[in-house]
Amino acid sequence: MTSDAQRQALRRAAEWFAHLSAKPDDPALHARWQHWHSRSAEHEWAWQQLSELQARIGKMPQRLAWEVMEKSTLRETGPNRRTLLKGLLLGAGASSLAWQGYSVAPKWMADIKTRIGEQRQEVLADGTLLVLDTDTALDVRFDASTRLLILRAGEIHVTTGKDPRPFLVASAQGQLRALGTRFAVRQLDGQTRLSVYQHAVGVRPGQAEHEAVIEQGQSVTFDRQSLMATQPLKSDEEAWAQGRLVVEGWRLDRLVAELQRYCPGYLGCAPEVGHLRVSGSYSLGNIELTLNTIARSLPIRIQHRTRYWTRILPV
Image 1 (tube, one colour):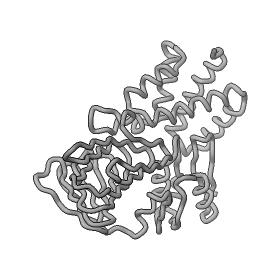
Image 2 (cartoon, helix red, strand yellow):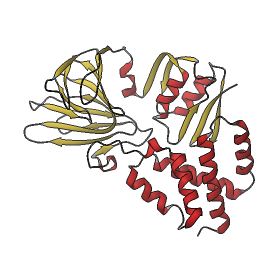
Image 3 (spheres, one colour):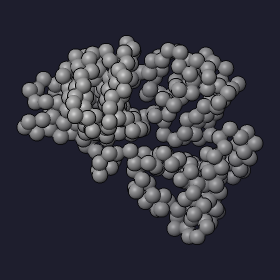
Image 4 (cartoon, helix red, strand yellow):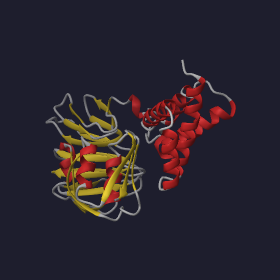
């Protein structure tokens, strides 16, 4: 049973979570938080509880997230309950609680799914090999006439099996038809990105009348109305399916934003170092190793508050 001291510590931790989320670059605020955090075992316990709950909430659809938050407020009422809910909501971030699925079925009910930071291989009944990237949700709908994948979130790498039935992938923005064997599809916010590694893929945005064919070595992003201009693929863009991220001359803040996809909780970058350029091949399965490798080549330092809160700062 949670004691009164622990309840009070949880409420104060929620307030700190809200303040730090609103002002991540305030050193005085960080110092005050650190003083509070280290002052007692209850404070450390409360911060850990809140960090773990925030990480769970960030993976959930909105309705379920609110249910979890409601149950996690320890039956508080009035201002105390509102304070804790506010801290949890601001700590998770409004975007984390947004439901990105495009149909009525939430992604946590998908046939195949991965957690944040997890990559997974699946071989389907027709011999198709799938690689699911971090935080991906996918439904499989095969019948006598069609092979259909429904991508609800995340990214998949597809190597199609030999089968006479048409192979289709549906995203929130339209439909893709495999005309070859190897491609990747990523569900973005309001857009879908297709990368074709072998042969070709037909693409039809949801409100378009005709299909466009994207050839091997090209990528394209599209919304429900139309396709953007095609772009040539770099030779190393497929590396993520083997657990590597290969970058050349990326800004550090861009790299951090990509690595954030593989980290439960918060991973951020101070504006003072965001412009620094990074090149290399980095592990997606060990983000701690990747950050330490980057830190050895740049004038930066890695700050950890908890296992769910990391920020890159200038030396």
